[in-house]
Figure 1 (cartoon, rainbow, N blue to C red):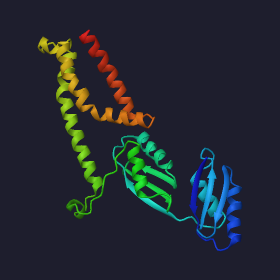
Figure 2 (cartoon, rainbow, N blue to C red; figure 1 turned 180 degrees about the vertical axis):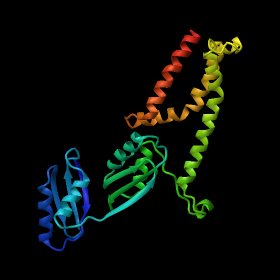
Figure 3 (tube, helix red, strand yellow; figure 1 turned 180 degrees about the horizontal axis):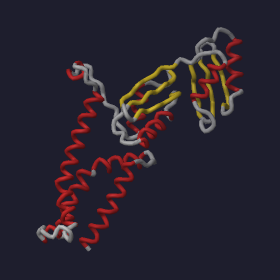
Figure 4 (cartoon, rainbow, N blue to C red; figure 1 turned 45 degrees about the vertical axis):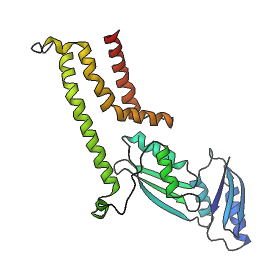
Length: 250
């Protein structure tokens, strides 16, 4: 069971209190309700496995009363696939007071509707960080912002630049590894290029440096007890690299 203090607008008399209490008590999943006319709030005990905050808010609205809601659009960094977007949505929906949460992978933004007075943008951002993703900080004093470039765009440019450097680094080592592994086809290549110990030495920087972001994603996925493309790539490449290293060394 969870407890929720829900602000309600439109309460004018004891009859209004009774209307809201009856509407909520008739909603499956709500165990107890107490509406305070003076503070215009409802104390609600509910089973989060049976009913969501969104449904509770809808029950109040269906009774003819209002719940003050606000909407926040938050930039989210570090998402790579639909599974990442789903992880962020799940994390946001666990925040007390969040009514709805939607994440757009293409724009890398989360749109959250929440009950004012219960939660706010700071709690929403913290939930995203706790889920293992980034929230680019806006800085009004930054001249780039004044020039029209948002913090999210700068973060995306930084990420793409770093990813490009990691790719080029991997390419420089991977091409010799590929050629060395195909020495039976490319017979014009020197024999020393096919030395397994040399190939292992060339493959190790690629696995550790270029593959490091996937290991970071794996660690974040383990912390939130979920799986995404980072887990797939990290586990798959580590298995192949580990087996090859063992065969080479032992």
